[in-house]
Image 1: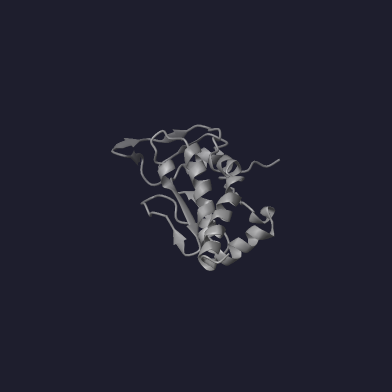
Image 2: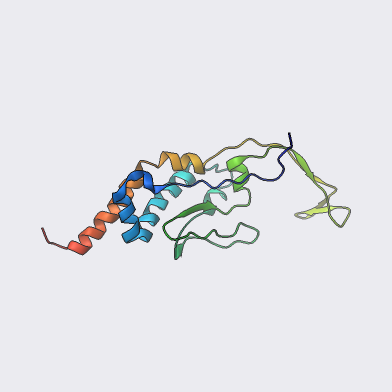
Length: 170
């Protein structure tokens, strides 16, 4: 049996079809606002569950829907993932976010490529070693925990759109 090498990055999808035809219609008519509100609920729960040793991971979260995003570009951090029509992206741009979410299987070394030493910050070292790390998921459980609140948020947005369209009519 061959060993799998490299990072296993999984995309977690949240299918809105499981809530019925009413919510599909909400997304199709007022999709961007409804998806934005639903994504804010999931993001708040994921940020609440994220490890806060320095706060950089929790502060790197962003939401993206078609034409709208809270992404902030930072040097050496992950690039933005763009959402297609009818979908929302909730992600973390910190470079270590995927390692904490899904862990690392094996330990290893980082050796210098061209020189005899690595420069890490202001010091020079011959090599850098890292250990195996178990996963501490925060985005997946945050998505599961906010599943019951997402339809309510979608219904709230849809209700506000109905009030705007109908006005004071009975």
